[in-house]
Length: 191
Ligand SMILES: Cc1cc2nc3c(=O)[nH]c(=O)nc-3n(C[C@H](O)[C@H](O)[C@H](O)COP(=O)(O)O)c2cc1C
Image (tube, rainbow, N blue to C red; front, top):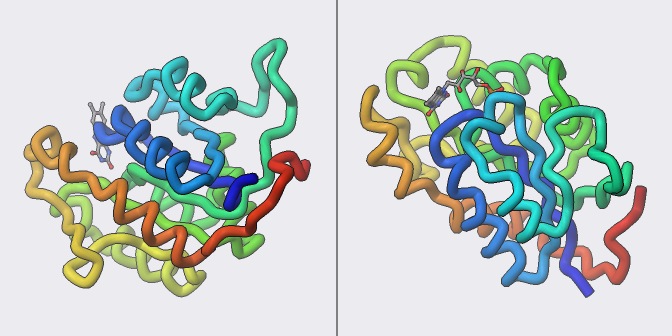
């Protein structure tokens, strides 16, 4: 019996290497998980280690690897973390130019509870396109964990490495479970 299925999308930034923290928190909360990676994120993650934890393939393209099931479990909730400047801007504009962002576009459109955790420096966060993107996503009822109210601020340029260890994985999981309290399902494959 699971409380639901959490789709995790990782983008190409340092904290992607620590996504196991989110998988572990979700598993302990009786959620199943799958991880989808942007093409850039593949350089930051240990896909095999993630697959051992989730018992699902890490997807980054439309092609599934030989021997794996074609369809993944249907998502009850979505966390995009770490979310890059690049992907946040694209998601807000509705751009779906890779498998991960196509998944995101569809899940937000289906109003699946979604939490975005940016990992951006203050210079990027100051850009008008980024600020519009965050506002547009919030208007679509996407929870964006950024700003004093959310307890997670952009970091000074050049300090990403030291900030990585503070990445709010637990806060992200807590936020998504509040949006999607759990669906208590016995079956995870609703493709
Ligand atoms: C070592 C390294 C660290 C990076 N860190 C960040 C970061 O913290 N935040 C960010 O927005 N982009 C970061 N980038 C840039 C993104 O990886 C780049 O914009 C990429 O196109 C993002 O692709 P994606 O959004 O599809 O994952 C980093 C790139 C490299 C090579």
